[in-house]
Image 1 (tube, rainbow, N blue to C red):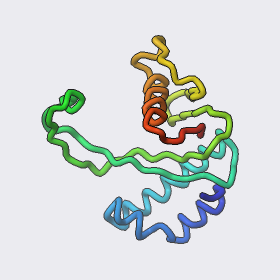
Image 2: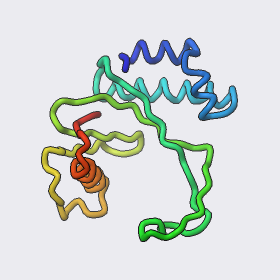
Image 3: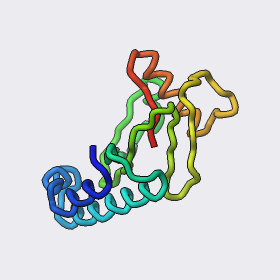
Image 4: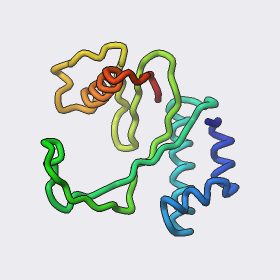
Length: 147
């Protein structure tokens, strides 16, 4: 965890380069990712302010070659990794609210103090977030708010 200035300094200094190269494979991709990460940090600070607990996360992409969505019904899927990912900056909140903001979408707030099913959230990101938190809670994981 670090404040935005420290995190960006570590990115610029090359402190994370070895780890980034494990994920992105080439020196050019590492440099591109460092710029991308710095932009994400700047946008996070613009939206939520700076604090000392900003962290960066990357979720790898995949494509389904065959069996798309059959895994939801215990079927088989033939998947392949791709060189794309989703990157997020996040920081803890103490009020039980999850705020999700994507570059191309409006901010979404979910109060996870209420984990009941909300029928008006069916098919929406808020319902997915609330449902995931309910599942974590049912399996005795700690949950909490974050930006």
